[in-house]
Length: 219
Image (cartoon, rainbow, N blue to C red; front, side, top):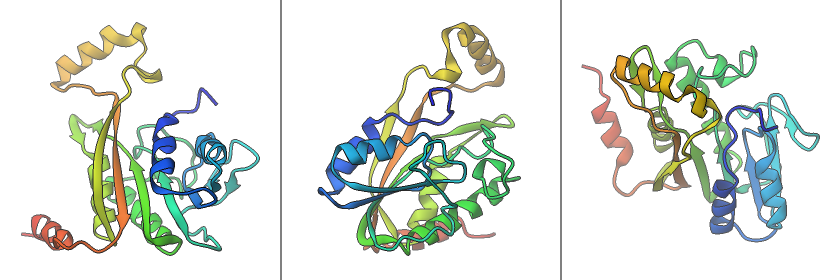
């Protein structure tokens, strides 16, 4: 599982499970990956439902988070979605990494958020980990976009954490000079980390949705 792209460090699920749930509460991991969330939840005596389009371990349910239903409400939902098409995981049309355009990817994510809304506790928390990506000579604040979809669909932002990972598998020392050259040539920098958004299922008292509708209004 070490070769699996997109693994998030165990500190994120550990800290958020400890903070937002109690023993025997239900945690839902909607992008199962290598099963880290399940391992941490079990270690902390929480129940965990974990699913993925292509499970890598036997306890991960093969299911699509845009239509998978739970039999009870989850106190905490953990989400570490793909960074659009940065890494192609599968050729499945329901895979976020296989969406043809950024708009398709946003629509894909919104379908998941709307489905999660049916299975999250009224005051439950959604943890979204998603950073930025660089494509066609432009930096895309992908995590911010996905967070805004959540704000438009019944969540408020409780905290924004920027997690610095340092060098990752994709930035090994042997590639440092090449990457640095590309950054100078392309006029951009590189930050190996994630935005971690702590979102709560609640109605904003500050009319955040209205503000975003104004900012992104059509001319």
